[in-house]
Image 1 (cartoon, one colour):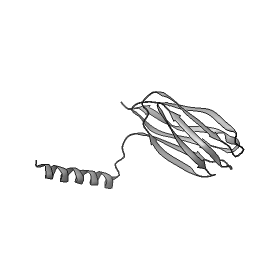
Image 2 (cartoon, helix red, strand yellow; image 1 turned 180 degrees about the vertical axis):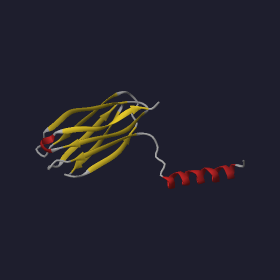
Image 3 (cartoon, helix red, strand yellow; image 1 turned 30 degrees about the vertical axis):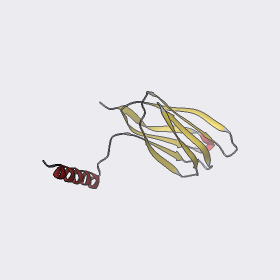
Image 4 (tube, one colour; image 1 turned 90 degrees about the horizontal axis):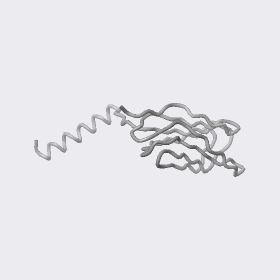
Length: 122
């Protein structure tokens, strides 16, 4: 096949995949603020990395995908409206080639719950 035709076939395949709703495997993390208060300086640590969220207002949600390179527990921390640091809240284990969905939910009185699961790909 000529390189020009190969590129066209690849672009067509990619377009069809996107239109069909193909979803890549990965590890998706959602942080939800279901409390009645703003939370600030949110940090989610995972095996070999972290991500920050400056602020979540009540009812606000943040979505991201992560790619841990080492096995470790997810660790979650944040600061409340009075500047008090709340930590560490430990969630499920994640690592290289894990996939799944993890939801971190902050509830009233700054209680934290983890939902979902992460499993190694086979």
